[in-house]
Length: 394
Image 1: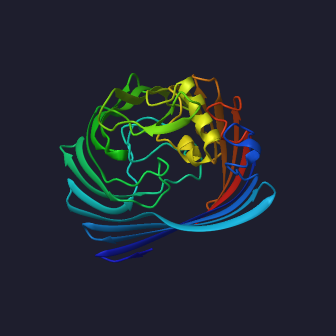
Image 2: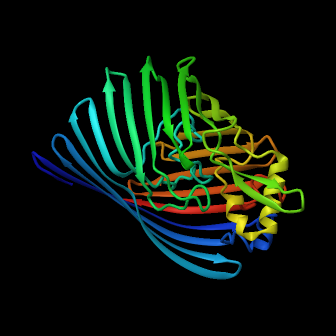
Image 3: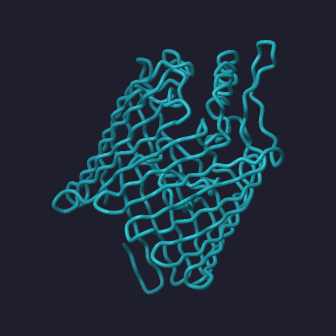
């Protein structure tokens, strides 16, 4: 670290090394693993330097580049790949204590839910986002934040350019987005917020969230989003044995909603139970039609797997138990999470064990198990996997 009266330079480095074994499922989407080509063995190196430059008292620049190397065994053949990306490269300017402007690649999240935040459609759900080593790649955002009093804020966000990630909706071109967000807080941890803007395929949305403490350790929360029409592609039949996937009509049609509501107990064990409702999801008939469309026309496989759905079905339960207070110095942390589809009864169990060894090393183990039939919600995920990693922080 370098520091003077006007300039400060801070540097941090962490790296992850790991190996993973996965048992791919033989499903309708992935017969004999020929379509998804899920690696059976996967080795990786993930290097994450971080630098901050502070020009007192109003300017700050943050750089979080990432270097990723992978070696995968897919259907008996080894493949390797290397990638470089910026998870964050942003400039922050604060002309006053109550006003801030941020520009560049960065990640901005909120909401009381653990699973994800529907009121923020800039950041989409990913099944591996609860992994210990997961780090969200930032979006290209322009953001202005204003504090109003001591406990309220107003944010304006614009995403003018793509960060070149894989499209959330397969084959769909990038469209600029914008959002207004307001939040107020009171008491010890209570908050209420709302969002309004434009999301994928330029669909207009509104969102809302709140967190309310019922006691010192128990809280009730909600996070949701509504649109008129949907950005989602829906499967249909032509009645003559043919199947297709057609986009919903943006900003027209029925009211759709995606929300989660949950209870949290904070203590030695942090426990949560969340219910998720997703009216964008497929019915059982639509789900079958989508699989038939992909089987009939491989060109539709991408849309079948990424049709613009946070989750494929309508109703879910999510539960988690975690603690970071085990061991003499709280060096052992354990988490157990379960996502269950109430539509078809399938689900996935995610668990993580972290053990801090000294000040610099952390050993991590993440077992995962999915259950359900060959046409279930989680048939595209491995039947089980074991992910072992080591983290070095400097």
